[in-house]
Image 1 (cartoon, rainbow, N blue to C red):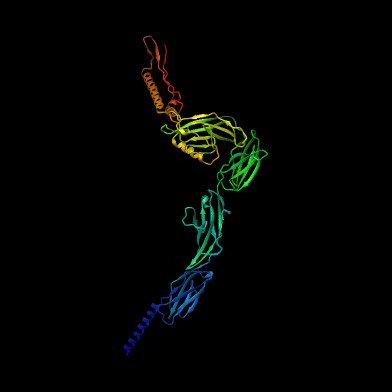
Image 2: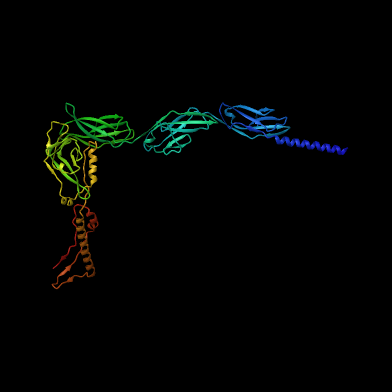
Length: 516
């Protein structure tokens, strides 16, 4: 009887222990919910078990001990997101006095972006080349933001060769002209498939160029009552607006502020009379630059005119072209006219065989058809009634080859090409043609080198003889011979350079003096 009771008691204890272990093994709650949520949105947390023994109590807990809901079945808990809703959430399950806690879910509250604006530094964003600037994308509200940048409506990629980004700031260290334009930014935050975006208004960044030194020149015109100088003060580059001032004999006589790089001033002049010196000033907010000074004097064409002819050669000494220049004694605004064999060449007329530009006439191909007599005439361009000053006729012919070999100035073929290019340009400036290709014939170089070598040999022999026998030598006639040597080291070091000069400098040679 007693053994039966013991067996029954042991059975009860065994099955009770088995049920407890089984219940504990099934208490594995799982909490699901969002990790991020927009402020004022509604989210859901769900706490459930794979097996639900009875009775079971479910609790949704925020943080350590804040119980948000308690139910006797799996919880689906809706939550209105507020600023204080951010934190960790748990699900706690209790069954038959046994408690188990779920995995945590951390909820981040995302404030929707609103009110994006672009804040430049400096403000206003007007800078000069070489300076830097910053653009900050500010928002009235918003968290977990990402930024996009646009320059002239084109999205700026990162990394960019022109810009770099740190947080909500776009930075340019050394601005150039291509950094100028309209900038805007876009701030956004995203939760799941829901994206909030706020775009700023565009901000225009101005990158100015520094002003170049102004250049002053003037032309002449007649308004019916007298002559006036039309004075131009011009900049090659820079950013307007620019303040221009005109000075006459260092006194300001006029001033203009224009949105251009050139200003024009008018001053009365008398032909043949020096009116003084004019100069202009170009100013902006950080620069003040002075132009060149020009004498405000109009000299009429007077004196004589003559034609200067220069033959241009290729490297092989073959004549390539002829350069004719009409030279006058004086005249500020001359106009030129060329004649060939007593026939006038139309002004600014060009052909495959010649090019003319003001006082210069280039015969690009010497052939029988353009060989002959050339002359020029000059008068004042501002007075059509002024008299022409005519030059003597000059014969242009095919030069003798022996003459070309003895010439000390040889121009290569590309000189003619450069002349043709410059003459065909539309510039009104006076063309200055300089032929500076100087070469020495090889025969001259050889003779000079031989003389130099002979001088050095004789001088060296004298020095050697004097060092061996420094005492005077006595001849049969009791004549004392003294050998002296003088070497000019300056000429010696300059000799290689002198070989390439047209005028051969005289070299100091060894002097032998004989005393009787």
